[in-house]
Image (cartoon, rainbow, N blue to C red):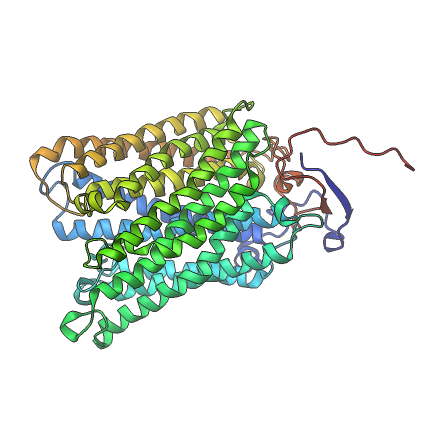
Length: 549
């Protein structure tokens, strides 16, 4: 348990200790206008889970269509819309905000010993901007959808008759939500740490969110400018990207990937941050190499801005540029490897408790390792030429984004669920679901590596008969994966029907959020916590000094 001293908390004066944030104010209006970071985090959570469900439905339809060559359940044009909407919803509406905006919003101030985030009104504004962006995205879906792929590549996106303008405007609006959240978190981490919490006494989740926030603030405006230019191209035919008007479609790729490769780390860094919390807690050990893991988060954030060109090896860029981008791609693997080896060293000789969060952490290590290693094949010039735009890329991307970010998100959700809602879920069902998700994920995506090496192009509606067995195998895997995810949803929702049965610290965690009640009171802490120990110190707390000593 984190060793904290206490002084009276003037902000919480008059606040009954038993009044948790869920009961502090009643009614719909008290939620939609709330300034409480915990309630905003919960609203984000249900919103991103809804988008996850929507994107998952699109994914299941895509896999069902690919069960057989030719038409299975839909026509080619509909298929193009399905995989585009799957990608756009999952990237812009789910994975990017999933961890920082939902779990991060709830947990970060608690970890820092703060009453709230630095700018509560900006925090609420970021949520409602997210909702507005989601509404525009749904409008684009019901008014014809989009068939460009989630990357909106020109010149096709400048001429497509689908709702590209509406969907790109939705992504543009969502960017403001991401920037506001990043600014808020940076200010909160700098200004609102508890007394005694130096930079190297902050939990590693805070370091991960901090690095993510830097990328959000610096990279997202580039995407916003790019999308505005694309909308201007479509509406006013200004000739920026369309070669018929003197534009350069490759310029769009440079702009897009200058944001979107850092965006990959907006997605994965918070997942890594969650794993850095789960592993020491369930290994009952201090984290191995704390400073190396902290610095590696910042290093990943920095290098992420330098590698966008590895998406463009076949775009006609110079051989020298391709070689430089290839080298930098291998370079970014170093800080990622630092994290993995330090997590494994933490687990070594630890007293490992295989509760559901730890199962997802171990799953993360296995799946992310495959995703990372297969990324090296795509970073090497010779192999990327063969594998580019094949199902190998699809498998690699999903091993990183789903096997990494989504698995970490589910692990973090299990880890902090008792703190967020005061309820314990069924551990038996959690383990069953984890096994199904692991099996289903691998059955779905491992065959796609083989498909890619054999030349199966991604995003194709039809395919040769020789690819049908592997596609069918992959589709069956998606059903197993979907079943596991629905079981998770079922037992988590079922737990909400219980009374408040979660203790303040069900896992034996050592960071500050575990010193509060479950769920926390409106102002988080009864007294101001004063940090005197390292964040992952599992040694017994020293005995209090005798009175008068």
